[in-house]
Length: 131
Image (cartoon, rainbow, N blue to C red):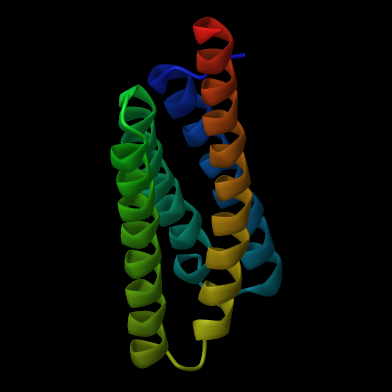
C-alpha cells in the first residue's frame, strides 16, 4: 500500500487527534491542565507531517547521496525542534514538565513508527516498480 501525501496527511491528523483525545482524557481524570497533555501530540503531528514531506521528496531523488542528506536533515530538524521545545517547557514550568515530556515522547515514538511504516511502504512500492 503506497502512502500518498494526502493519505498520509489524513492518517496523521486522525492519529494525532486520537492521541490528543487520549491525553485529554488522562488530564481530565487527573484534574490537570490540558496544555501539558494536548500540545505535544499536535506538535509531533506537525513535525511528522514536515518530516514525511521531506522524506517523500527524498524518495523521488535518483541520487542516493541526496536521499541520505534529506533524510538526515529531516531527522535533525525534528530532533532539534523537539529538544528545544522540551527544554523550554522545563525552564518555564519545572513542576509539570515531566507530564509534557512523557506525553511528547509517547506521541513522538508512536507517530515516528507510523511515519517509518509509511516511508517503507513507499520505498517498497517504488522498488517493485523499478524491477
